[in-house]
Length: 413
Image (cartoon, rainbow, N blue to C red):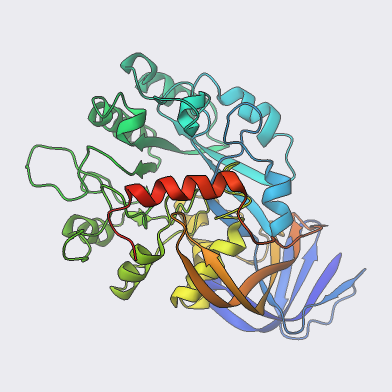
């Protein structure tokens, strides 16, 4: 054996395991998981009192560093926080994807897979990050369905889905939202891959009233992903008057549409999350939507998103599931997401610390948190990498964004 991780609480939802066990790694693969394994090994790691999980998977990140305004470094912001795999959520499109592949996917120690944006340039323009008016879908000429499909077909080893943003400000003030949505739905269907939809401040309704009008999530299919689930702006999942979840949202979940946290810099609202989870509407995926404008607050990293849902009362095993087996299944990542024998040896070790801190959402509201999930150690393909724990305290630009978000929010404390 290369290493045995001993005496940890192994939580592996994909294999329905929650027990004190050892994990043996050999040649970059999971060799065995069992009680008090007696195997010759080069080294051991004592995980007594710690939580051992399959390598964490962040279902929603932006990591096209330097080529897009939002791109973070995946090794610094993700692997060092215990996250072994990330899904870049549409930073590149058909004409910019090869740069993402060459300079990020192929160069990173973190495993990077991606969703291809229906817009050919992805999120390369400044307006896509709020630095200037407009956005990536302001003209139909850039929404080339055939180019999207061709790029996916040529790169199926790393492209795992399609992405579209439904937000009036990035679709020519809403004029092109329906057509962008229609083309993204068609491209994903042609490729047989999931579509992730950013749905926020959108002219496409969350709850449809006209039979012939496209709705989101009404027109999503099983396996598609609705992200930014807990924002409180126009097109929130809640009826702003009754504070109950829209029936189209409940129906979508019942037919297999997946719901992603997609925290980001603007899409997590404590009030909405509390109202929704009290109605038992928990996320399927805990994507952080980590990028340059939130990595120093209010998102910080994936363990912080997990901490927020621990505070909300989400069972620990469900939290672990939402960052391991569920995203692996959603994106068809067959060699990770569980500690099954022969899988890639991606392993994360976590600890739940006592704390006494106020943690902010994306509109400046805070909640007082007493327990925090932090990374302790991580192995990617059997190789250990150093980890760090995020600090607290949003930077000034984040505080400014929060103030603007508060003004837009329909639902808040």
